[in-house]
Length: 216
Image (cartoon, rainbow, N blue to C red; front, side, top):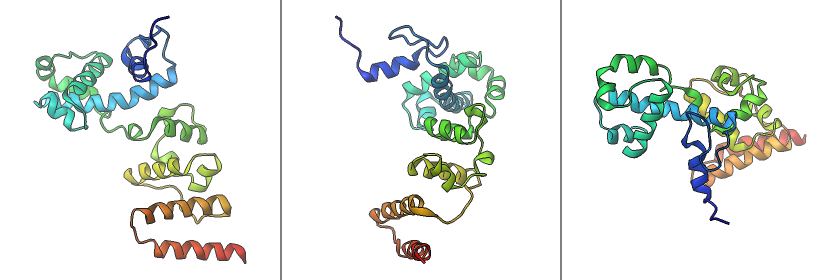
């Protein structure tokens, strides 16, 4: 039996031929939900690279703007150009600058691309949305941290959801923790801040007040 590809090779192969959604390792089709989640973030980054190239930047400079190498920026550029049916040659992109930029409007600032795909999927499930792409900060801001924890999201997922909302000018519904599960979640958050040498004196006293009230 031949050698099996390593996990990293399998992961790279899983998404390599996105245009026909086939896994080149075993020629099976990539599940549509995985393809969609991966492609959402990839296209947002590719759009940033495409604009940078259209405006005269090098691939290395375009890559630096999103924290990747010039080679990775080239891959993202080729992918987004295929997706949008645009020329991928740098000279052609610059020659058709206005057309290229018009096609990527909105993609660069896709707020959903900022969320971890699995967390986005879970949030869409909690909100009973038809598809992940329907998830918006406005929808999510109707829920509280308590509701997300009750729906079995982890504390890390709740924190990332709140961070995403704050970046987009809103927040989860604010309310104090109730019950053991929520109190423990608050305690863990405080302990994490304490481990990073933040002064948690005030929030600890707030939590203790809530605990004391709960015991009365």
